[in-house]
Length: 315
Image 1 (tube, rainbow, N blue to C red):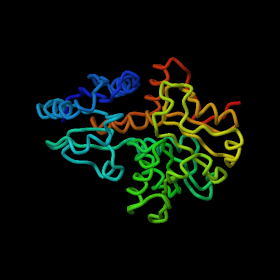
Image 2 (cartoon, rainbow, N blue to C red):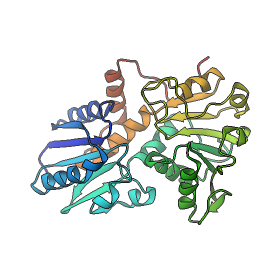
Image 3 (tube, rainbow, N blue to C red):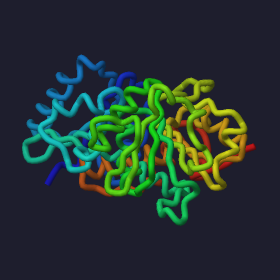
């Protein structure tokens, strides 16, 4: 039986912006455990040594674990002793834990996003959702978690990325084919990437898009940056009930969300996903369940703002 004391970390570069310490300290308090959670700025070159130190700490008997954020979610995979089925399926790791003498990687981002989208009112059933396609912005580790969710729900997905070749490579990997600029079907699920010749928002039929999901870092602490510079007429082409979900949560209302809300499109920010994935990671380390709502409230307190509804449209 492990001691009721946890010492966990976030490894990211940069790490100062993270709300994870506030969430996990709230989790410790909620279950009556002692311990700590610390965000560490770990440059890519330092990640192998930092994971080895975590391995040694765990092997010595400490109950410990780590979250991984940009840019480590894929790079950490060969440094670990194994992956859970979820991390293998997603192809990215955001949670590191110790089990039976091995340092393992899990992915709680994917189920965390899935829960957050449901909280925001997204309908996974084809006959209930607005539009039949999703547009995914980004091609990194967070985008992989989003693709897992969209594949689970069978939502045809178009990947847009500032480097179209990265989007094409990611689509090819998930479609299990050798080229990704035409579109593919995998068990009824279509994933495609815009080709370098057509990698612009103008190439998308927005009337078919019921979900826009930002998995890039665009807008992070940069309120005037957007990964999707649509015009008002393009926003207005979205079907009624469409949802814009931005994984970025700081600032609260990114330009992507502001642009969408100005046209009456529902939006939600990334705090819901953060709370759900944190609760799952905490349970992985400790075996203790904690209400994601407790963690979401802690995030809002840390930001000094009232809780927002799961999805909203603002004029």
